[in-house]
Image (cartoon, rainbow, N blue to C red; front, side):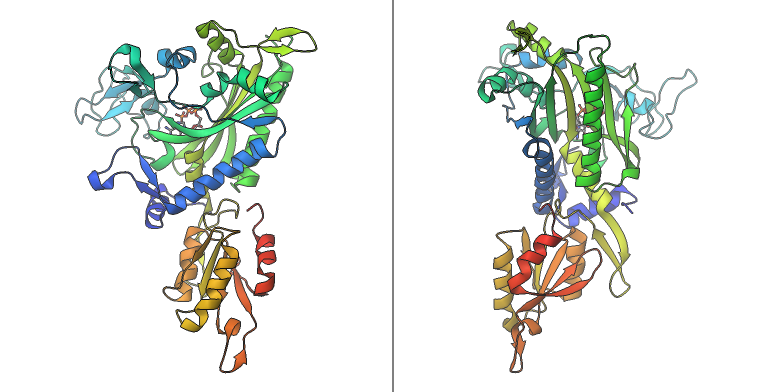
Length: 462
Ligand code: ATP
């Protein structure tokens, strides 16, 4: 069972060092979070799993890391300067600021309206100001002179760096269509919507890929292109299910209808998760046609094309874009892994049932007690495992409490060193340890000489 509510995860995330509200020392800062020692590991592992599935295990996708702050005309060409706006309104009574589209969608419960049918403040039913369009991009300035000439933007997505490097990648990597360019890094949006933890933040990480393919023979009827779009939807859905272990019943595909589609799009589907407050987007998979390459060609005055050896023609490739949120996915992995169930003694325990590949700590080495006689062997086991797997050593508190702690942070395996390992009262030790499985709580005895083999079997994909 996943967590029933978000508060459970928010509190566990802070207590156990996954995610902290940012700048609490100064009273907090809306919609920003810091990632603690375990959050940072979890985030790296999810990104690594994505990179493996999108780049390393495929021979048709390469990686990129483009500059965050780039030429401002990039954002003119992409349409972000002109159209990346949300409608905002303030409550005249409580002064809270809202996204009008979110109120209308029912994101704050059934929308309240006055007699004339106008939306009212979800907080206190107050009258709202006329909506104003508000650009979500953060502006900054490059150099020392603060004028319009020196304006730059923090990137609200990662994709544009890929489009403007298309020809560099083709030329330097001798790539033939179809192929993709993948990139994962931070993006910024001036989001005013409060709450929902790391679901919607000012600064968040994305995992995006642009897959370039041949344009269709018939623009109005791009059957093969749409089939490729469906293939990517299936591929990405399978990743959430099989690689991250998200239950299929809490994932769905939602196709955008005509009104929701951008004018250039041949189709967009979102992969959504059933959050405690309802369905929400995890990833958008957009069939963006040749819109972006053409737009950058027009804005720069230098057409971006691909030379097709067979037809001996310059063409503008079409694109499929799977764009995922890394930090939003991290929240889903925590919600999904959360479980409350009885421990060995029938007492309640909290377990994060992460798949081993994403668990922040893979193995905990726990001497049975703080007894000096156990420490050398326990340290030896720790030093054996540490170079291979992210490992924690813990000798404080009772062994039962340490198992509970490791369960709560989702460590798949605990290795216990006891007196049988080192020997006592003149009886020689067996140089073996106990390996305890987080989910089944089963314990097996393993010779230290064979320990790494056993761990390897039980930690697939790590
Ligand atoms: P939403 O409708 O939720 O605002 P979007 O459609 O604007 O999302 P995209 O531009 O398609 O989002 O970005 C791709 C992914 O990036 C989203 O599916 C989401 O996982 C993530 N994402 C977008 N905005 C944010 C944000 N402010 N905070 C965290 N993740 C985000």
